[in-house]
Amino acid sequence: MFEKEISALLSKELVVALGCTEPIAIALAAAAAAKYAKAKECKITSIELLASGNIIKNAMSVNIPGTGSCGIKLATALGVVVGDDEKGLEVLSGLSKDQIEAAKSMISDGIISADLSDSSKKLYIEVIVHTMEGYARVIIEDSHTNIAFVEVNGDIIKNNCSNECSSEEEEIGSKLSIGFIYEFVNNFDIDKFDLIKQSITLNRRIGLEGLKNSYGLEVGKTIKAQIDSGIISNDIVNYAMALTSAASDARMAGCTLSVMSNSGSGNQGITATLPVVAVWEKLNLPYEKLIRAVALSHLMTIYIKIKFGRLSALCGATVAATGSSCGIVYLYGGDEEKIKYTIQNMLGNVTGTLCDGAKAGCALKVSTCTNAAMQSAILALKGTTIKATDGIIENDVEKTIDNVCMLANEGTRAADKIILDIMLNKE
Image 1 (cartoon, rainbow, N blue to C red):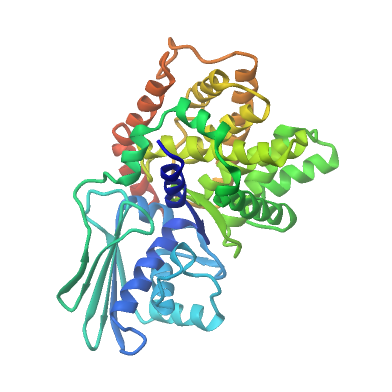
Image 2 (image 1 turned 30 degrees about the horizontal axis):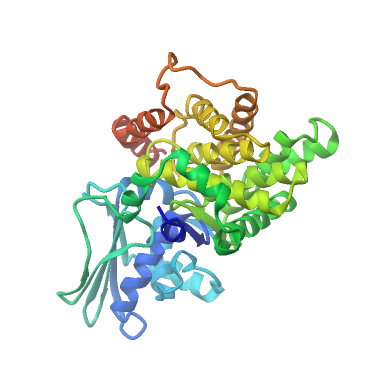
């Protein structure tokens, strides 16, 4: 595989995003539908949203940046008000008070309906904007920015919908292996991969913001306060947990700073980046070493997520933390064998962590996974790894990854439905 293909894969999977990607993807679909319906020129009569259960689960409770509020109807309304899909996952950047009030008025007027789609796809969003002059229907599927279908007044403008979820990145992913990724990371030209550098800059910035100001559950800020007061030690593990969870605190609470997402998730981007950054800061290593370690983390995360799926009943931070554990081992000088050891340790540890939607509490899971990444790396560096006699672990780490991904895709379908039912029926 050539550097060009890896660059294309990173460009597809490392995307700058403002806010949690599920409500933002809803807003993106709504913005596109409003644009095609010429909603700014014609009076809107109704707006319909249909979304898959995994989208609804992740869009229900997480704050939308700049609004102080949450909700799938608000995300839809904001997208319609903005009416411009050119910004991608930063579609809601720079919201004004007037736009937020206009969106809330749409909800109060009762013109927005939201329901569960009957699509079998885990990532599916359909928005139909009706005006006095006609309508436009837009479908996003398989990835958060993939506008696969556009229909305007009965005319199909675009139709790339597919019954299969196979895609170009899956084809590239089938060519990847842990060994190939390790070799690539050791040899690529760092000047050609600005996305890696940008992920470090953006995600570290929001991490520092979360440590400084009050967001969500203040998981990161609280850990930092305990370090400063001497209750816990100022070591690499605690600092990595503080910085990484602080970024998640800020993002899930609606901070208006963008992050570099990984495989459709900002928290995955944060978790794949900041534990590695934290260790690098403490070890005071050359910047080039950091770039290669973060590249390793991102690529390992992407590699596993291609098989794991973008949305699941299992928490994606576990996969991203597996990536960061590889990056941490790399910073300490660990070789390919030690990287395989830390993957085994991670997948034998935090695999069962459930995803019960995007929310403030995600920062706690990010903190837990960061701690596990550090523990796994430390054990791997001394040659300790979970054995194939244990649970889902195989002698071949690639088979272990396949087992985890089978569990995520096939073994949690009932859990996904139960989790969504619980969330929708809470009093």
